[in-house]
Figure 1 (tube, rainbow, N blue to C red):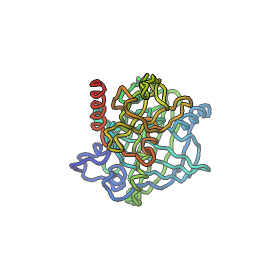
Figure 2: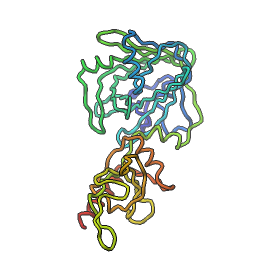
Figure 3: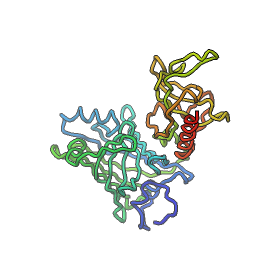
Figure 4: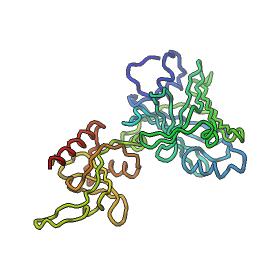
Length: 346
C-alpha cells in the first residue's frame, strides 16, 4: 500500500503492504475524503467477565466508558467509524459502538497515531483521560492485532505514565484480534481478552461483523464526535474597571466575578474585537453561560486547548446565531499576541 496524503491514523500499520483484506481497507484506512460512511454490523456471540467479586469494578469501568460490564450472548452490535482530525492529535478515528441489550449501551473510543513513539493509541474514558498505547500489527494475509504496550493518564498535552506493574494490576493486559473471513470478503471475526496478573482471564468478547458502506453523515452529524478538543482564545475577567462618566470603579463584569476564566469565539461583527462572545461560569449561580461583553474587561489572553464538553458545545452554538469558529491554532495564537500587545500599549 502506498499513499501520498495520509487519511487515517492506522495507515502506518499497513505501510509497505500491497495486499490487504477488503474489510481492513474499508474500516482501518477509512478517511474523511471518501464519499460514503463506514459501519460494522453484526453480533457479539459472547460477552463475559469473572470472577464474580470483581463485578463492582466492572460496573465502575462501565460507568466511565472503559468497557461493557455485562455477561450476555448473541448481542446485536454496530460500530460506526467516524474519521476526523484535531489540533492536538491530528488524524483520528472515533469508533462509536452500540450494543443492543434490553437497553442499548454505547461505547466510544478515539483512535490516534502518536508519531513521537510510533504507536497507535486509544483515548478512553471521561474526557479521553486514559491514554492506552497499543502494539498494533498487521499479520498477512488476514489478521490484525492490538496488544497493550503502555498506559498513561493524559491531562492536556501532559501525560502521566504508569509503571508497567501498576497498569497491569489496574487494567490488565488486553489482546485484540480481528481476522478477515476467508470466504465472505465483507466479513470479519473479532476476539478480545483481558488478562489480570492475579486473577487470570477476567473479561472477553467475540463476535462476527459485516463491513458495510452507508450514506455519509453531514458535517453537523460528524462534528460532535470529532471535536473532542479545540483551540480557543482564553482570558480572565479583570479585577476592576472604570464605568461611566464618573469613572466608578467596578469589580469584575456584570456576568462574571474577577479572575473568571472565559473562552472566547473569534471576531463575529467586524468591530475590531471590541466585543466578544464569551463562555464562562456565571457570577452567583456558577452555571455555564454564553454572553457578549467588551474585550477590555478581559486580560491575560492566551491560546489554550479546550477539553470540557460543555464549553465545546457552547462555543459551537455561539450567541444568537453568531458562531464562527477559530480556524486554527495559528489564528488563536496570533490574536492572543495581538491583544496582549495592545494591552501593554495601554
